[in-house]
Length: 413
Image 1: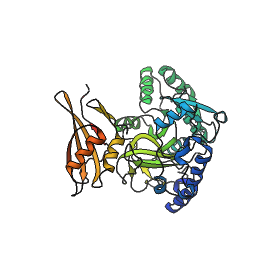
Image 2: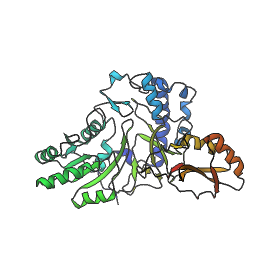
Image 3: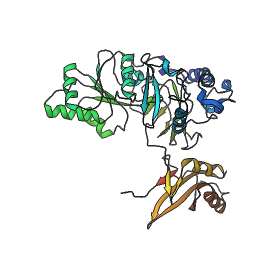
Image 4: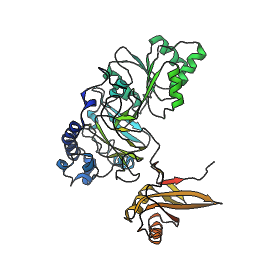
């Protein structure tokens, strides 16, 4: 697919690789310095970091990962933002609450969450009336998309969730041309419109998030004349990545840096390997550095056919929290990472949990080179995982590339 004139939100989307590297070498040290000086939550974790030396994604990987559990604990101690914002809470326009609870700040103007870029890629802009079916209650999704719609010049019908018959009536009365919300709720609205005999054929665009967009559902929308693209965002970070009309992976937003790491660690995986999404935002108001999303994805090679030059990811591929309770003991991805670190000859470990009759069974699959000592690895398994398990040595590259370090195969039905 060739790029069209006016097909890009701004010049950032088509920067050369050299320009991207130069910009990152400027932006990253500034953001690290901001976190050190304005966000007390980083405290000792960033005290000895030389900000001037953090100039690329490789040097960024040397910094500690910030996990949601740490952010939540900090917020309980230093309400409501845990010391991770660079502004006082009273300087923000909004404070939202997500499950946990975790509190997130928000600003009304200037496309603060950067949602406009994904909406623009979905063809939404001036002249569109957008039915915003994300929640406006406590959580930020509704305001995030409203903010993005303002950035692209679209009119918003702040519909929220529920009252489907009223949603249909409002869509017709207001001449809605586009939808934002979860992937499946649009179908509920359209099915209700069919039931009521209401023609919503003027609705031709959709930008969805907050759940998986299955290809069968995308096709159903396409059959109705609706072009449906998806975005990937979180309440903490705003937009992380978005689809373009090429529909070939998700393009990383221009104001975040995305790493894919082994779950439970901060260690980057090889390109194409599935792992946990870790994000550094260049938002000066809320400088989250190496924030672990808990989501799984993988970096795609090459660039999008649409002409945007930023790195792409494969989209949401599940959750990274693979903690399992085995024989009454919790086994966590962090422990599996420690097991790998103990043995230079081990490149990858996958703990497989199953049932043997009425008892739990644990197998530890290890990708190893020829120097591996199974007895030494078994001893480490007992020491690190606090359980006995059968160790199996396998060739390097033989374990599945799905990001799993703990594969729980027990049937819970």
